[in-house]
Amino acid sequence: MADRRLQVFHTVAKLLSFTKAAETLHMTQPAVTFQVRQLEEYFNTRLFDRTHNRISLTEAGKRVYSYAGRIFELYAEMENEVRALTGEVSGVLVIGASTTIAEYMLPALLGDFKAKYPDVNVRLKVSNTEGIVSMVENNIIDLGVVEATVGNKNLVVELCKKDQLVAIVPPGHELAGEEVIPAHKLLEYPYICREEGSGTREVIIEYLHQVGLNPNELDVIMELGSPEAIKGAVEAGIGITILSRATLVKELKLGTLKAIQLDPPLERPFSFVHQKQKFRQRAMDELLEFARQYCLEHPGIEG
Image (cartoon, rainbow, N blue to C red; front, side):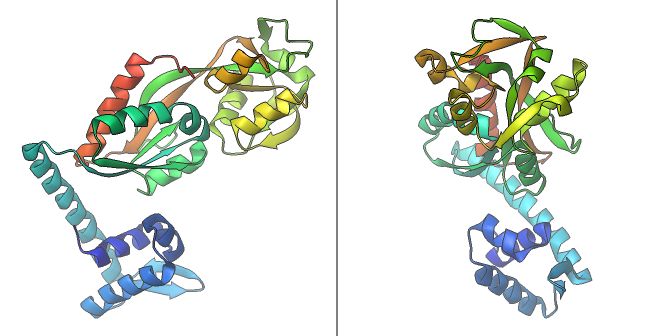
């Protein structure tokens, strides 16, 4: 509802990039540039300094950016008040989730939410934990759901549920008959791990440190970017790994993989992360409350 030129300018100023703003707004870069130039013509002054492929806010740009943030907060407050009177829950929510959560937890949750609130359109962005936290920090997404610790103390982090991680091996592996193995056994076999920035990878490294092992002693022979790719590599006998039990339901039923409990056990939090905004869309509040209740009703992640 706010001035489109101001919305586009605010996004460019927040990201300090016309390219990133275009991606975020689902616009072409020339269209973003046109909107900003229109606003500059309106104020009859430059809002950005453009030097050496970098942009920065001019003094006028800093003033406009500050007022724009306050304007959008007032719009949000106004919309919340009116929608509270009418009982309407609608709008567009952009959610980000790390790979494991996006593939194995969110489909059921969002399906149930959409059934209850059909007028809310949900868009999902998938990245690793590091990428999701960055998108929350830059207001690219309204809500993130991540699988590792969040270090930014300026964000709200709320536990959703605990996730158990287990060692997985192919059925013919010499460890396949074990129900529990000590953590140091992981160092004895070729290991397949997730990519840099993955929440799963960070949690495993922290776990190894906690049990007195050096992660650098893992015999890492392959790095892959998704649970599905890793499972396929383990099934092929390339190596062993650690994955969320939530990702293994199909393979355990079919008998193509064997899950083995670690000693000591390895768990991690699945958490909601969002900005400390005073006013949010009512749809966002409803989604958060719905998700909290969903997690209470589904404390263990089933396939």
